[in-house]
Length: 318
Image (cartoon, rainbow, N blue to C red):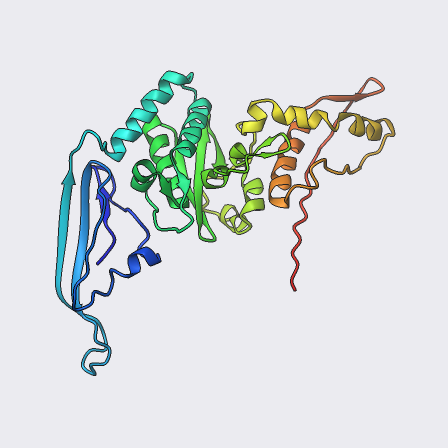
């Protein structure tokens, strides 16, 4: 049998990942039969496909699976206590409009946080759909990406799907500028590194900063047909809430000493060297952006400072 699919008027989706061990036992039913149970958690239509086939590999005349019968069970659920995915999405967006100023940034942030509150990451990797996210409250990166996309679509915010190295996340267009959002990475129980709020670390990144966490993303955004080029941090969470300016200010005196010495090029050690490079590298890229927005002067003359973050990723083997 195939894993169940769900449909409520939009696109049909597999509720769970058919490659996972939890579903593998349903591929081969013994002669004694097999009980199958499934909880229908949302209003809508579920379809389950059953296949009866000769799978005897010891039969010399059967070198391939031969289907004897294929049948589909369709279950329609209409239960006010179990709203459809579309109903849940529309209700969330309506609440979002009531609780924000309806700007694209504020709505994208509210829907980001709302999504993280709905589910826990499924470390068994069984559940992978918007249905599992919103009604079973667990899912993989597919769930995070799919439900955030549905929410953004309902809110009228342009978005796209990014994939790489077995992972997927969202590109979001805010005020005409694309940026990167990885809700799976943001949904962490280790919320803080110092005063860095990890639940928003991947909100509003450039392609270059996202590639620090997903190295194969560099190949994505360098393609000629890549549609979501993200080069601006003006809609980054830490830039918008002022935290990036606070971090940049911590370096102000050290920078000024180099400027007063009329050094044209210099480097400063980062304050977050104890953080993992995948975290410190992103934070320092945001800090460098904030530094570049500051006007500086030496002896009454304006200085033109261009700050950049250098990330060194190391690996060891034994």
